Image (cartoon, rainbow, N blue to C red; front, side):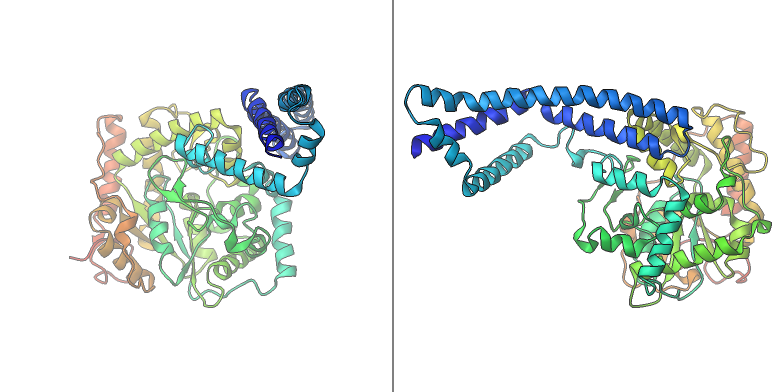
Amino acid sequence: MIAAFVVSLLAVAGFGLGLWRSRVVPVCRTALGTAMTGITAMMDSELDDAAKEIAVRRAGFALIGAAFGIFWRFALSLALAALPVLAADLIGLVPREAVLSLMLRLDYIFVVSVAAIAGAEALRRLRGPGRHDPEALPEINRYSTADRFFHMLAFASPVVLKSASKLEDRLMPGAMQEPSGPPIFVTSLARGGTTALLNALHEVPAIATHTYRDMPFVTAPALWNRLAGGRGRDVGRHERAHGDGLEIDLDSPEAFEEVLWKTLWPGKYGPQGIALWQAEDRDPAAEAFIARQMRKVIHARSPDAPARYCSKNNANIARIPYLLEAFPGCRIVVPLRRPETHAASLLRQHLNFLKLQQDDEFIRRYMRDIGHFEFGRIHRPLLFPGFDPVAYETTTPDYWINYWLRAFGYVRRFEDRCLFVLQDDMRAAPQETLEALCDELDVAPGRIDFGAHFRLTPDRAPQDLYDPALFAEADEVYTHLARRSALPGTLSPVGGKVITARA
């Protein structure tokens, strides 16, 4: 019995060694990626039929090659497993029938499998995070094959997201909660501090936001959360793909509202950029859909009590007049960052995502699907008045300082209808600044440590990176908006404000 057990372990070790040394796991991973590439092509609404046919044909040939590669690797591994069994039988140590009989027992299979898994996990921990360790990858790359399939299914067509919403309405008609007040829209150009501000506001008990749990069926948050395993579904906290030190998990808030706007107004998204929304673009049916989505998000985050819907959507900076008309009483919060640091950060992230989207096609698709066109190969600027997308190369500082100038020059038109929050104040005095903002929003902050959400170091960058004339204009716009700073309550309620820390 002992001899049979030892030989069986040698057979298992030989099989495992064969799989490891022949690198069958990377080959299988490549095969799955190839299959998903073909499925992606079939579901990609931006490809015509000819392009889809070519992509699927290439994927098919690649899968045939991968299948042959997997076959010979498994055959080699089985031969290595058979070697000790046949050798022991040949020398008369133990009959091969006895070894095979032992290896087919359920208790043997269970114990050896658990031991192998435990050993592999221990080895992984000893080696530390490796190249393919999910903990070492940005959050988009952490999507499993199943996650990617569901993502592609959800975003295959706007019809899918609309249908998911209708299905949730039918199956879970009570999955909506009336708001306790008008919505709050946090918006600015990307890298302006909107994510940190949303993370802080997300902790306020009376505020409800989208979270990563809503992906990919963001239009049916309650139904998808139930189907996907509810609170039992979890991932460890990890740094997001931006490389800015912000960590996320499934309960972290995120900017998924743009999915709705892209689904409902596809004509605004042109190849050169995204057109602005004006008050005359009102669409009652679309507004009813968005309002219903807000109530769903409130239910998903606060099923037992009313709350205020809050979104972080950088593209809403192009919709200020529309939002004010469509959602009476809404509050528009605009984080304001110094132009030299803001533009420098925009350029860094653009270069970062150019590389990420080149290395992984799924990142490009993911960002496109959720409407994040700010950076990289899919960059589509918001077409603010006076902005020429081809005046400067996107890889130069002047492109981004010009973009900043046109964006906040446009926002300046609505300065009396917005709440501006200075990046410098959020860094220097986060607690006082956020408490003042909550005061203005008429929400009770509770006993939250807002300082945990903001960098406390000064926000500085060189000013000589930019064309002097462009920077001078941008600096004047910033100075004008920053000068509207006032202590809470000292301006008329109809006047625009820059929220600052209390003295």
